[in-house]
Length: 521
Image (cartoon, rainbow, N blue to C red; front, side, top):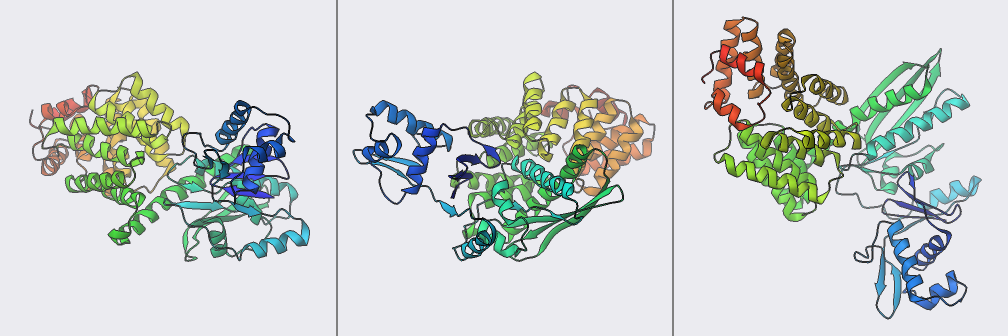
């Protein structure tokens, strides 16, 4: 029997406990204790019940029992203080109070029959964030070796997606119960409690491997995204990594965009904390004075509903910091204090989240300066999730502010590779342009600035980049035109005031170019 609760799978036949795709180390006695509590979860279990079942009636001290209970709680992410899953009822006993789903593990025809019967159970509720199951990819080649390759691809995709704390990802063991079966995607979504399902196929022919993938909205059956990848079948492991990166870099941004669009269509009274956060992200991406104000309002509404939503605190902090950088702030000192306060709040909630660390490193770099602390924070964010677009972008800015333009460009380029159609790519291209200016690569800086302008013609940093690069190249008319556009977008702009906003101590060539372009001192 397998018992599924939260992100855990408790397998009594294999005597294994797994959290997502990871095995949890657990002693035999603690395993038996959990087994007994879960199987008897409909009632309160007394101390004597546990002693008789686990220790065969031998004399056991209260301290020994408490030690085992604490170990059981720790194994499933619980504690004596929280008692989220194992509750102690004083003078009565103990009870497992988590929501559990049982899965029988039969073989052959009986297993197929049992799975069909399971589909009659009530559907699982959807999490309050984007949720996805990655089904085993179909082997279209008939080659047994290809089966292992296909399974490896899926496992790597699940692992990569699981690094995003903004996603709810079904563990490999649950997804693979559908292996080798013709499935109804809507039914898969209902049984696993997910909004999206990724399915695909693998075909090997003539020294090449072709992988097709499609992301489906399980509620409607509509296709959200589909693509196909073809590579030479040389080094299998390198190929797995390459295809995994390609798939994850396509579907994670697409999922977020789809969720933002859905959140903006929902009626306000039905919104949850995460819905407010998604709406705030959508506003943030416009990068205007008005959109930052609305993003801050929505992020604070999210925090009112869920004070533990660190992502919302980090986003609001980013908005306050950028209000200073873009000259939107009526009270710059207030905005600075709020940016740093919210960054610290986000870190206090979850300093192990890649996006939270990335936001904090960027805010600190702008408001205080980019030193070793900010660089280490940014690097840790990327190490936690090498696939996270925001972490890579923030690290690029931290490097640029710290006076490391070459490293900044590498991080920005990695971000572009991860999300080549991202709605905020104009900010990345402008960042690349400013880093190129510090390296004296002015022609390339112009190209980066033009790409940013094509994506968003109202982003002021683009015109700082273009005005400076054109001026260094002696293209005075184009420099003046870019400078005029900058003043249109940032009417109060002057060079000394912009430097005082923060983050420009190492932008020597950029500042020199702005002066050459005739911008006011």
